[in-house]
Image 1 (cartoon, rainbow, N blue to C red):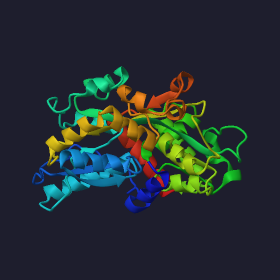
Image 2: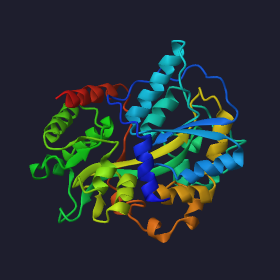
Image 3: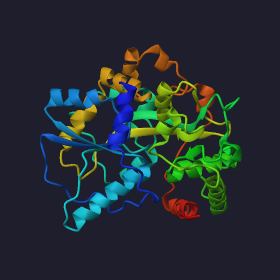
Length: 364
């Protein structure tokens, strides 16, 4: 993929984070819009697809894809909830055929029963996935989902400014005031604070959650702001010297600015798996299953791995991925990095403590 085209898509499609905490989704996605056999509505992260995939899928399947984007799991949760509220109140609301939540949101949606089982008569190529991606605890056996991409959340930084990779405490360093950002995502930024404090990033301890909020409130006096939508462009342009961000975004920015580096601090960082899944209210579940099967094609997954600088979890695709991507430790981390990575866990009722703490950070 032409990287400049990806950045242009970001500017054209950017919706901006809606803000606020991830919402509880117990009444989510009830009711169905009128089915459309030749249209597929796909809601995905920003800068997260080679657009030729959509064009080629349309040419092969005859399905037109309406493609929309979001900047965070928080925004995805809110958009799904708002769409459901509109439907339940008798107003027209957008129904989505495909979404790409991260593992903890996917697990919550699955637990609440608002995702469709994959149609195994259509989705027949799961064996293309690496074994580890067929046994993830948030969806064992891929009954509801197929990985779209996996990566890490760490720190992108300007190697001409830092002599060594920075740790989480860099976001408290006033020497770089107003030249750093942190993600505008509740659990990612709360997790960064907990990593900085040497705590469990999935802690259920109210005192440690409050301490993480205090850390972020202090960081807020130093950083430029919380930003999930534009930090890639700002890093690439040299307007930031440091950004809390996703490995895939930082690698795309590095295509434009080779002075950028990416690091997972020694105290730890998050790993994520974003997965294709189908809401229960999808107007065109058959078409959604057809797209998932298409994405499992090794050449298609490889195309997206290169375009988005990610591991798609598709083992069969690796033969089509260039060595410079396979050998990039920011995309395929070595074991010593994997050992200090954690997944964000769905914490049930404890999520409300995180939401309250995050609101305090945002209101400070």
